Image (cartoon, rainbow, N blue to C red):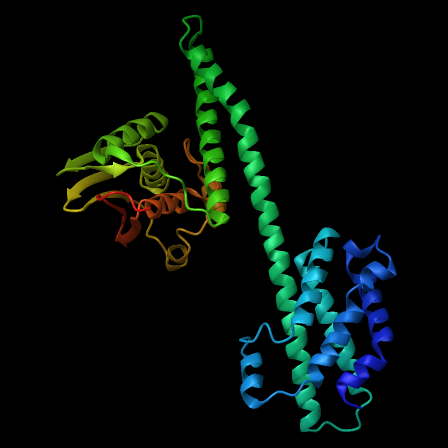
Length: 379
């Protein structure tokens, strides 16, 4: 009996075994009925059987084996995506979704092979067709499920960042007001300064969360270009970072014409992230050097610090969001959000201005180089 006929004749016991697996091995299935668990399994198996029956030439077989024919079985794709929607709504994890497909494949193969007296070339080809069909279903399901997870995470971050702004603004305003009074003693002043420093850190976290959420949705960071001087912005940023890091040494040099058409607020955010990163990871006994140079059609900013050499593993994910949060938590300083988003957002700001951010590491020195084109900001 070929595998497509076998699936159609034994679909009910296969589905029953699948449901039993879900009930015994997948915690999220505990409160679901048989129908809810088996909802898509039967129609998926019938669609897989129909797909296996379709003739295919060598070229088509090769394309499917390489994963280059995702639209070859639209019914399988539709069922798999519906299944992912259902499992996401039922709070299944991605691992549990994958486990379902693994169990379904194992059940079909085990039951079918028990009916085969011998294995020939045709049987192997049918097994291959079964694997291709189920792989297509699994790919479609996991892809849609992962997208739903990303969308839900981004929505949560956006709401969190937006709703934190108001109470954070109140804390910041109150701390500033207290510092302007003459009624605080030394201990109280230190306490208010700590409050203000914490508010600044939370502000950095909120800004990073909102910017990351926007870029994660595929939206370029909004910028409002206007005449600005990157040299002046760099000096102002260095002064602000120096206040938050009184033990650090910051040196700023300017050379050439550093004026152009940029969003000054965004450029300041970008440089603040880079300078804060240099202070956080650099040797505190060595200065952080910021060099701003106006040359021809662009202005470049180099932020250099001395410290541990960047490893090859770190280098590969240096601008990848949320990859360095654990390291930042170990030695987080004031002004750093600690979310592992600073370098990512700095690069996104440069890209939004038509520019770039590169990094080099030679010996103990690490240098981030920002290039901002001077011409009118691209549409």
